[in-house]
Length: 412
Image (tube, rainbow, N blue to C red; front, side):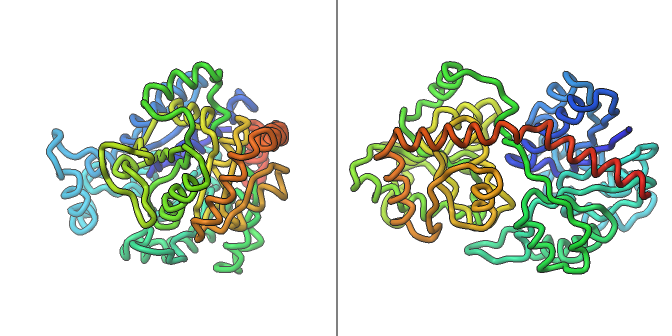
């Protein structure tokens, strides 16, 4: 079977780690597969995808239509933004322009993805459905564009309008896969006409790909100069990630007698370093108990999880708890929001975590306090979770995807 994987966005964090876990597992399960990864040049470089995929026999090709809008011209500041605007407003209206000038990624995909048995889109958002000569499979991670949470919306108005037009077309013309029963219910709620098409495949831990010892992880973490004891939240600063209540919980934890810091990772989190107060973080260079590391490498991320005292997610809306899965598989205690997708992990995968009201700094502090005050119980729960996740590896996830791929080709 020849599989084309089209990852036009190459999302930082969970999106890229999903691809990094799943594609090599395809080859491990079925070595004769021919897989070609078509990706964004920025994410290919950022995630070292070419090197990682070369080791397991996966071809990597750059989508040239994304190069100018992603990288700009000759390193000129803001040139990428200017080009992106020109492509969206002017260049795409000129039919004879080549795709690397027009930025028409859909047109480029249609011209290059030929002779494949399956076209797999790990993030089919903000792109029109291409007209291909093979079945299309998409992993639809969440529907956060259907909600407003707080502050600035996750997507701007143009993006949201586009998603509302294109998303049902994707559901109509592809076989949709989601990673939780909760997300299948979300599609049923908003798009009931496509409910019967949706397939659920629970994911393995993104962190299980890296094989590192505790000593190796500690050496990597020590380079960041962060305290030995820390609460880790791998995230970014979008409103639904709900970072604020966790930051407000830190002074409450200190009143309960805990000398501990919060470490944030993810895009733009380097802007959030300082001292936590009751209503925000004082952005100061001294007495820091909130440390934003920004975007880190996969190995650094896995090391930070391995060495964390507690891994936390205060998110309001997710397809599943990626940070939690990474922590559970490494035997690290977890505290998390009482949202449906997170509760599903406890019910389906038999892992253990303490659950809090994500809107309540006091409840967040109380649950983390419970973990910190009962380290033996917390560790036993973490080790139970680690054992429960042994059967949830990427090869099992890959087998389920390949079953869907086979089914799609048979009923083409």
